[in-house]
Image (tube, rainbow, N blue to C red; front, side, top):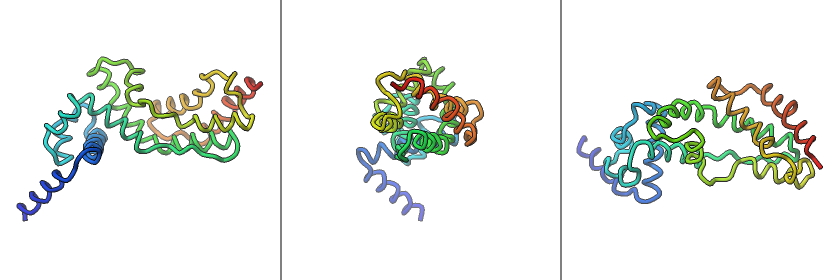
Amino acid sequence: MAILVGVTDQLQRQRRRGEELESALLNAAWDELAEAGFARLTMESVAVRARTGVAVLYRRWPNKDDLVLAAIANYGKTRPIPAPDTGTLRGDMHALLTSVNEGRSAFTVIVSAAFAGLLSSTGLTPAEVRAKIMGDRPLWSHEVFRRAHERGELDLDTIPGAILAMPFDLIRHDLLMTLKPVPQERIRSIIDDLFLPLVAAHRA
């Protein structure tokens, strides 16, 4: 029986190639990060979880830091937050922030726990780490703001970028500070008491 399991594992390793293999490696690295944490994660432990040799990892990522950054980026890229289309800016923002809150709370807890280790190990600044994680993928809010501009609900030509970023910065702050999902009352307050009045003040 043990021989059969060993042969099956070997065949699975042989069949995985290219994007399929890389996806399996990154998923294994994310699972290891979530369960063991950054400090205890090693290239060897990820290889064991992925049922592959450690040399396979080193051929793609030269060290643990690059592997963890790639795993975090892959998690966000493969689990996008859909842009809602409720017909109003307020409805879209409420739906979008709620989706971010529900879909990214666990992600935020795991990444924030790894953040200190990444900063110390890589020597990167927080902004540089975030840039590596985000890459060049579009922000979830771009489509929401584009449609609101077409409806005349906001003016993308005059509104400061800081106002557009503010609701997401506040949600991220609350998630990091409490490590818990943000209450719905807080989300509504961010939209109705802070964001929308500022949008109206900058509408031509």
